[in-house]
Image 1 (cartoon, rainbow, N blue to C red):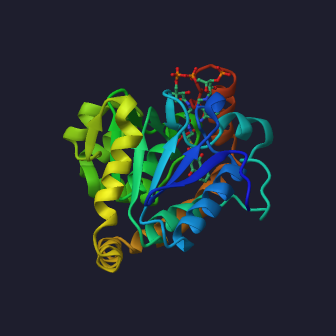
Image 2 (image 1 turned 90 degrees about the vertical axis):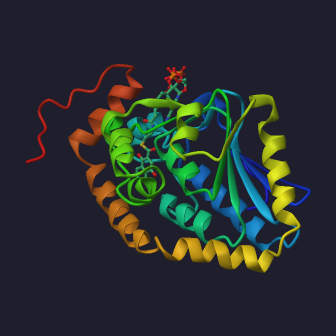
Length: 264
Ligand SMILES: CC(C)(COP(=O)(O)OP(=O)(O)OC[C@H]1O[C@@H](n2cnc3c(N)ncnc32)[C@H](O)[C@@H]1OP(=O)(O)O)[C@@H](O)C(=O)NCCC(=O)NCCSC(=O)c1cc(O)c2ccccc2c1O
């Protein structure tokens, strides 16, 4: 895949900068976006010039707001892909497995599956105006894999459950206090700051960094199994009226009505 439609990819100094470029949909992802992100991360892995990957989004509004809910309301899925599959689980694994640090430069809203992406990155630098949160239970979705279990490793069980059960938004200062982000900077300095961190990493031993990343990952690798199961559960849940009510309500700009459903 050499040219991209939903993302931008550039190697600048020692960093590959991967930018989700769907600002009219708040940089939400469809199947094609995920496929392109996978191709970009593979390019960064294979390129010996690249020591760090920076993941960000176009504009000031959103880093990524997760799955494209309008697409899901329209077609019941996240749209066509070359492989015929929606490969978000493979993207999650790739962000973990690429033996180079991945820095999320969160330029705006990191919501739903977009929040999960930054959680999976090794480091997060946030713009002062960035906002963080989950949305799945409001739109008939969930990430019961890395998105919940790994999040709890970062912020602790109580806060992870609060994030998922209340679907609130948290500002960058709160995210920093909770250990969800490494640093907060003015928006106009965000990507430059991420590049500065990348150059600082780039002069260190790449092999030591690789083993360290793998060592950090090894301790939570069992969560990949959970994630697989969660993705299977999600594709079954996505077919239900309950899940479809969430997506349809978002597309129709109204509150979802889950009153006829129960979890007994
Ligand atoms: C993010 C918001 C809270 C922002 O609210 P705000 O009021 O500031 O802005 P608007 O709501 O007016 O949005 C502006 C504009 O952008 C469009 N938009 C925003 N987010 C999305 C989106 N996710 N998909 C499509 N379009 C989006 C919005 O419609 C507006 O366009 P207009 O043309 O109408 O002006 C708020 O927008 C919001 O709550 N967004 C939805 C967030 C969300 O629910 N995300 C998806 C969660 S589910 C998910 O991410 C997911 C992840 C996975 O990994 C999966 C894996 C396997 C299966 C399913 C998965 C899955 O569902």
